[in-house]
Length: 286
Image (tube, rainbow, N blue to C red; front, top):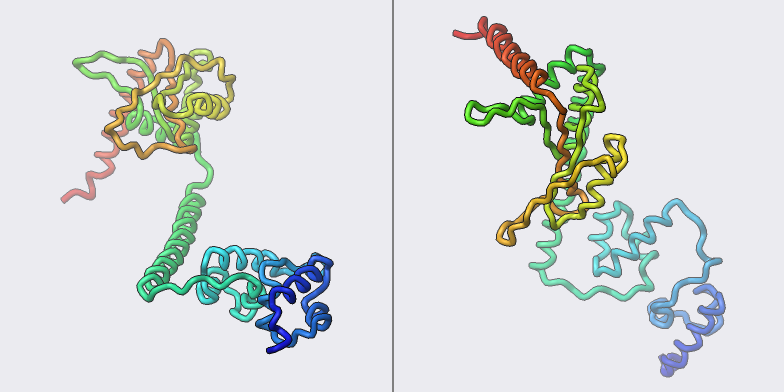
């Protein structure tokens, strides 16, 4: 080991050669370092020159493995994450510092978390497959089917008249863009005059109001300036809201002007659906 006594001096030479573009083999032969562990220490933290990097299908895996190693993950943990061999991982990350050893309790917690993340990924694949299969079961929709869906949709989500509060007007409020799109398609089926429609946004005052207005305007195909005044909901600091973040866009309010007659027809249609459903269910009753 006498030739390695001046380790820092040897490291300076190794780093200089590395930065000049020499490969590990060239540096090893130039400095007569025949111990790989010492060569790793001499070149620790120094990336290989570009010419030594050959494009390979596993390049993305290599970069990901290095990221995970820098986060303190072991070879076993990286193998579970990426699904590649530990020998490949060793080659990819051998110049990086070793992570600190974890206690058995920490290792058990991490292993449990990895297993749960894997289980969640499997469940998500199953969830998406079920949704896709159900979507394909719907297929094309006839005008009558859209008509019936729209009546049920409005009666579930739309504004309704009450004996103590006469509100015979068509108004629909929803935060789901799919619900809004279906409702508008239903209005077109009913040949409601587009000029009779009024749109506005309802959203918490702490949200990004301008972004929400642009989102809804784009969805329904109008200019932001055509939206009516936005209704801002006051934020109660004692309330913990879940509907926050970039995905929160409030609700779109759709009103139909002079729609008392249409509202009465919707209520009648709904009563007809309820009566027909009861008749259809009658043979199944005991």
